[in-house]
Length: 249
Image 1 (tube, rainbow, N blue to C red):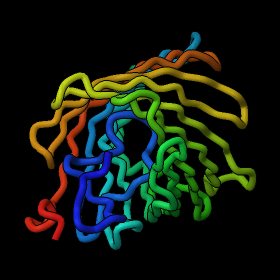
Image 2: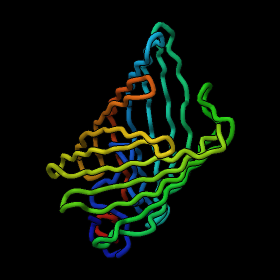
Image 3: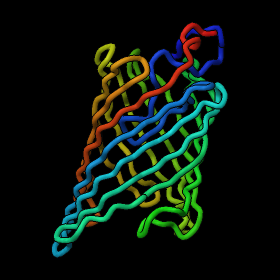
Image 4: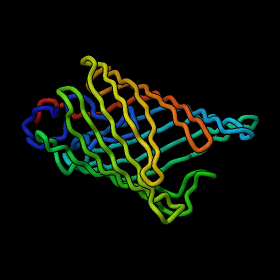
């Protein structure tokens, strides 16, 4: 629920609202004049069919968000990655650079879900071999509604132009999350591709240290296409809020 303030359409929430943990994003922005960072460390282990070697990857993922208005924010993503193929030396690379915005189109009202749109440019400035041939882009439509009093259902539909092919890739996420206590939260989700249909599961937990600081951990397994991938991610999200925001001024 949105915090009650003197601004009827305020996006400010009494506790941090973050895209971590999980694959999906919510429809809301963070609120005018608020800065937020969402950062995580992810470990991937991929086993291929013989004779291909096992691959281990360590990814540092950071998302930076700035609330421009109560319904609009700017955001950016930076990924650093270390690849360690079995029997080979490790390589450190910038594997993702994105800049864009999110806009909250509708707030939730009863049975009418909240609706948001995020658009980012995928910049062709990564390290080899992750560098895109051309500028790419990704658009995500996000909805959110309540299943029960303390359970939120978030759905995402995404279109991604990678910059390496002309045809877009279509993805989806369906996530259910809820509060276990006033500090502990949990979620489970299914996500994958609609272009060449796939479905994967992951889940995890979050812990609210204070209204502006949250820790999280989650993980999952993917099977298919001759490989088995397992991953775990641990992260932190924090925001800077003007002191007078809590009073609704």
